[in-house]
Length: 156
Image (cartoon, helix red, strand yellow):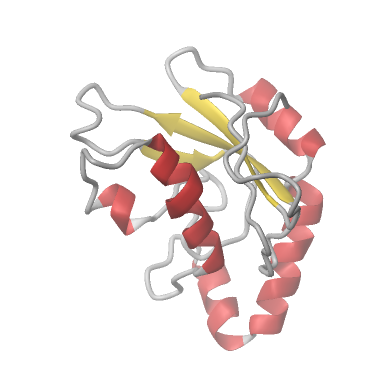
């Protein structure tokens, strides 16, 4: 599943146009235990740890079901996480506080991170730093391109 691309159609979030490499680790008893999901290149989001890239996503961490699969993670869970951040359950306190108190400044900072850290060069650099034979890595692209269907496999 490497190089799996997810595109948000009609995306009007500050993450629009961003490109992230996602690190996925499957535990030995997957699908009965949830995978570990993390962003490899930096992202500014209340529910994502800025330094480690770890994702705080209840459906992955607490309510995982063996009925879910990797497609659910890339086409439903992660896009929902970006569209609807939850500042009440933060991994990044600064992002949560900014979203609650100064939403316009939060949006500006997200856009700054997208411009600096969520481009093809950043993904390529992140990929070189995170080569690991025991894990899956995918690229998730969140842009407003109506011409490409969500879930298209692309070489990156």
